[in-house]
Image 1 (cartoon, rainbow, N blue to C red):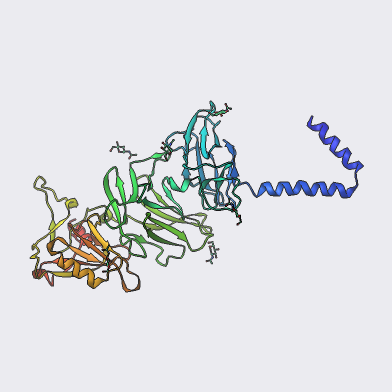
Image 2: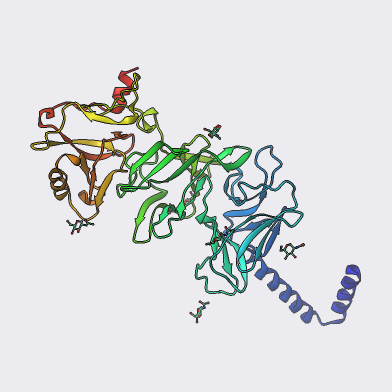
Length: 439
Ligand SMILES: *[C@@H]1O[C@H](CO)[C@@H](O)[C@H](O)[C@H]1NC(C)=O
Ligand SMILES: *[C@@H]1O[C@H](CO)[C@@H](O)[C@H](O)[C@H]1NC(C)=O
Ligand SMILES: *[C@@H]1O[C@H](CO)[C@@H](O)[C@H](O)[C@H]1NC(C)=O
Ligand SMILES: *[C@@H]1O[C@H](CO)[C@@H](O)[C@H](O)[C@H]1NC(C)=O
Ligand SMILES: *[C@@H]1O[C@H](CO)[C@@H](O)[C@H](O)[C@H]1NC(C)=O
Ligand SMILES: *[C@@H]1O[C@H](CO)[C@@H](O)[C@H](O)[C@H]1NC(C)=O
């Protein structure tokens, strides 16, 4: 049949004028071009097919992890030779064979079906569209949009950026919606062969002033320290001039979240939570054709939550049932506060303590902050600026033991700790030194 048609076409061309034939060719070319522009959208993709984002940065398709035969729908970088998965749809429900199909179905779901047409994974939406289509954006965000909305309104029926796996890309959020309680967080792969969620989570702390926390199960393993307007006070930035990325915390009536953006859009950057609960930020190096680590969170053993000592003037808060030194119950003052005539001792370059039992006000200045802490009698234990930019602003107060305070390995900040007047003039020796001395 096809052969016959071909011959027929050539015969027609032979008979027609040259001009007419070339214009036919032109039309054909135009059709091809307009389809090429649309490779980022799809109605359905089968295993073996892929979708490439408009700028060619990311690709969506099926893959297997390591030696495993299980198939997953995933997004990876298109442009680089090192296979790097940034998102997986069916983390918990792998396909067993390679006959999976990812489809867009009415009124705007993504549905992954196996060879028996059984749904193994599906997305959700609260709105509907006449003509829902899937689209892979150049940010790495897989979205469902209304194909009839040609205005590019960024109204997504669903987006993969709301369901992070182990990777935070620029433009994604870590935090929560204060109204719905929706929580954006990272979970690592279980193993290199198994991308289902491991035991760790990386998410915004539930109470007090915002900081991000790595937990193993429910146990805190690491805190970033609160955001100080430039960075987390307890993070160690290897790329100190911040040439590639900048981070921020947004806190409005509806949402509070951490995110980061790229200053240079052609740089590839990602933050990942590793299988053993470590946070690593990477940028891609075209020179070495590899990922370069530019930020690590946990640098030494004292970055493990509450593991290393107390400030001078404090002593571990031993539990009676324990003989061994265990720092995890925090520190208590050697000399109790007198509540009147206490002083505030300034410690510089610190990772600020756990903010779960903290209070904050973003418009107060440091003097007002000190007054407030002093006037709250013994219950306020320390204060600091919220934001270190422009000489500092905002007020952060602690009403608890000061847990997990240490000299920062990054750019820490000033914290003013309430002490009995008799402790004035004591030397500061903190966490890291103390733990080394003990060895
Ligand atoms: C697969 O299932 C959907 C809904 O369950 C149905 O509409 C569709 O016709 C089925 N496709 C095949 C090939 O059986
Ligand atoms: C979809 O979301 C609605 C509410 O937003 C929820 O009630 C429903 O259970 C969800 N469905 C699935 C399959 O997750
Ligand atoms: C798209 O934009 C045009 C002109 O700005 C407007 O008239 C139209 O209502 C818009 N359509 C949608 C679906 O937003
Ligand atoms: C997760 O925790 C459970 C119980 O603590 C443990 O048995 C399991 O090995 C852990 N899994 C991973 C991947 O760490
Ligand atoms: C952006 O990054 C690319 C790739 O690393 C580099 O070639 C380019 O010079 C950078 N542009 C700017 C303005 O820094
Ligand atoms: C924060 O402090 C400012 C200035 O002292 C004050 O006007 C405002 O009411 C405070 N906000 C809260 C929520 O306490």
